Length: 401
Image (cartoon, rainbow, N blue to C red; front, side, top):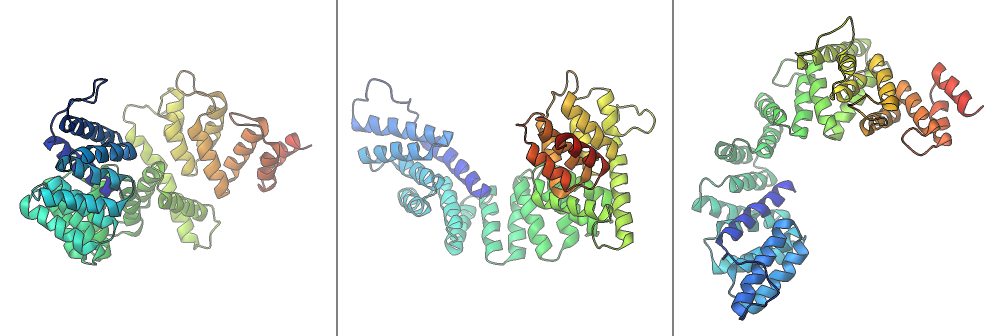
């Protein structure tokens, strides 16, 4: 879990700030066991900061073998073990560290995170509530408490904890996304959508997907399919699979390949048209020539964002953008985009898997001629035979006469 990893970082910072400042070991060994223990502690903390959990654990165990009372080494060892996936041993070491220094809030937060990972909700809640008692403004403790309350099916309590975390750290976007989720589960759609959109605007891909759902279904906002498409496009670019699935389903509806009523097909077609038209609003400095799309205008001006916009237009069923992508893939865009751009190839592959004819033909040409990939004529032929299109037939005759 991302939040658990964040707990580790926060706790490590707390441990590092309380540890003595000791330089890394040099060729000359320290004179006594205390100095050697502190040098090993410094090395362990350095390795922990670099993400080398196994190396950190080794150094910290060596430090404790020399000085069992070195509390900072024990707490850091707990973090290293937790980061290495040994949750049980981490809990033991963190509890041992707290037994020696109950005031170490960073270690207590890390213990709460480890207990969350172990799904010991009661134990985690006790540790996090103790942190809040000692430091009421500890945002991570409130965030962790939100996770615990959600796991305990206390949705409103979880929402309260996330809101408290956000009041302390308004830019904690994962907390906002989690808040939106629990509000949605509690049936508070308007409140949930507001939080989803705020997190989406901050770049949280999963929140972008749910913002799209909200606009597609009119949950707490006016229904707007073009706005839903825009959010799903942004989420899909971040690799959010449900957003890719939502766009694919909408394309199938627009192309008449689903069993949706004709009115829904027409709405999907119009939604994609309106989305494509709306791309111009993001390009206030670009002049339009004739009926060209935003992507084609960017190609004409040789702007670096041309490929990204062309892919969005192609994903919104613009045939001209699709054809231009084929040209840019093979020829590049002088001084801006090299031939065989990986983003375009990835789009061809995704769209071909979805069954879209033009991308299937384009991908067949890529494999059949070895354009930026190893030549694979059988794969190209298989794509073409499954594509009922005149261009597919002609290319198939060329590749497999």
